Image 1 (cartoon, rainbow, N blue to C red):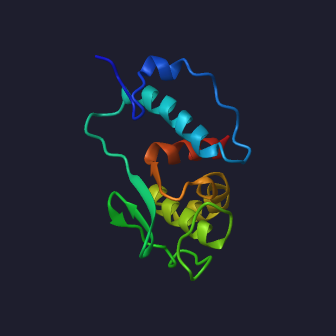
Image 2: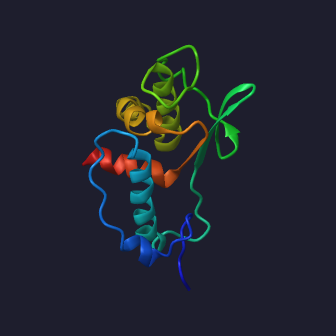
Length: 151
């Protein structure tokens, strides 16, 4: 059996990739996080029970405005935790609305409100500000950020 990941590469091809330099800002961070998460998911796949679920976050710009979902359901802004803005979510730049999105994703994913608040600025700068107009973040993308934030 050959293990393949989302981009169709085998585990051996991913493992052969050169290491990614540390995150320092710029447009390549989301790509670097995905590369790191692909490597991590290959390593973790042997230990992960089959059928385990991973959250998927998606953002889209529509004619009716911005839509952000987690596993197909609307993601709450989490104003109850901290309100950076009253204008809802935004992405592709650094600011209050992108930080609200960062906070909401982290609150949902890590389940620790204080940690989510603490990490919302670096997550906004490293990930949210670099998202495309329409985007998808997988749980392993967020794990890769969380692992880099510990270093």
